[in-house]
Image (cartoon, rainbow, N blue to C red; front, side, top):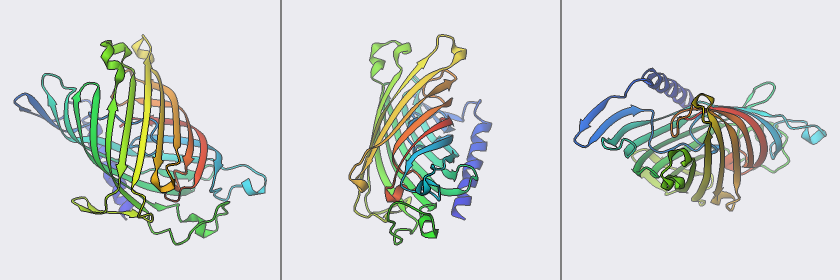
Length: 322
């Protein structure tokens, strides 16, 4: 019931936001500032190559290696089955204060929601689904620097328990660790555009970012903070870079290359690497745009992430930044 309600809320919010996408969100003048709500133009940028980022994406994955074979033929001399991942998501600013002098500067209350759904290639049986939610306070003090502090929640309810139902796996599996894993982190984030200092907008094509996540037991206004089944691995890190190149003809769009590296104390900070290269349209930096291309991933399994199983794949993706 919880998942169905979450999906319904995503669809409801998405419909409402898309209805006003081409209109100016409601704005109140407050001296030197404007107050807007339910805006789609967030101050803090999205991470293109983050495998657990909030986005709207379809990813067709060809498995190169996996600790879970999901009843593939790999143990009998065959190949792995691929996966089809569909991630509906929405992200918007509840409230945003922007400077009238420079609308690129300000602060916002940022909300992101996505429900990644993992399916086997061929029959499209669902093998996993997660819930990813965050509420954040973001600020843009200058055009080259973005900062954010967020309460981030990720949980899984389907898929991680499949090995107890007869799925053949080349790894041991602890059947005592199947109780709806949840992780509630606080995350400090920063994104920098180092080429902004060249004072040439056409060269401002690089973004570098980093996240520091930590778990703190307790309760806040968003509920009880949980970190199970692993109660003593409190830290995680993430960093990356994105490079965008736009063609001189604005109607042709541009190209993007992105790398994301994450590491969790849970598995001794073993790196998880995600690379993306694709074509983007239209030519609007830091705005919503279509992105399609190739994604390479090598790290802990996305569909069984709470148990640190490994997987490696290459995928064709189509996504819209939100």
